[in-house]
Image (cartoon, rainbow, N blue to C red; front, side, top):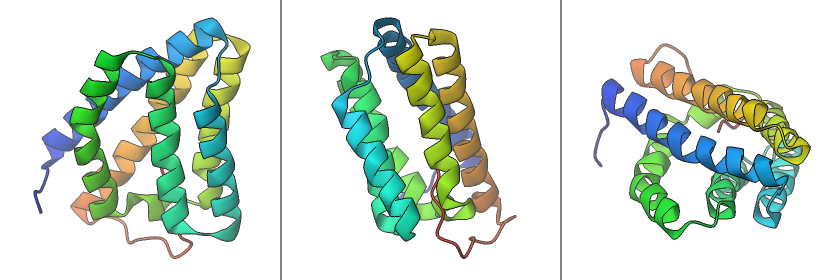
Length: 157
């Protein structure tokens, strides 16, 4: 299995933030919350309540893809696809999803969704950037071996 070093992980999250913040700003400008995002968030909320880690991860992935797909740009989707394998690899390898409580990511996603629905592009971008920054920091902390995996099965974006 390939191993990403710290600089590569930082670059991966920079790329993710670039793609996804473009998508959320566009969605907010249209006040359009795609059904795919709503379904993913509903699944994530249910998984968090049941502490179903595997389902949380799948719902989280679907949520972020829903944002990108909602932009309705084949080029953006293809570019995002190029890094999606590394995103999944990083999320799985470092189990950073387990280093926060299950409801943290649900709440962060709710903030992103509310900003989109309110048509607030600035807040949508910032909420997404904060969310991905938290996820990046958890991955880096896990990679450095600074934090044990939390026993509660939490999820992270």
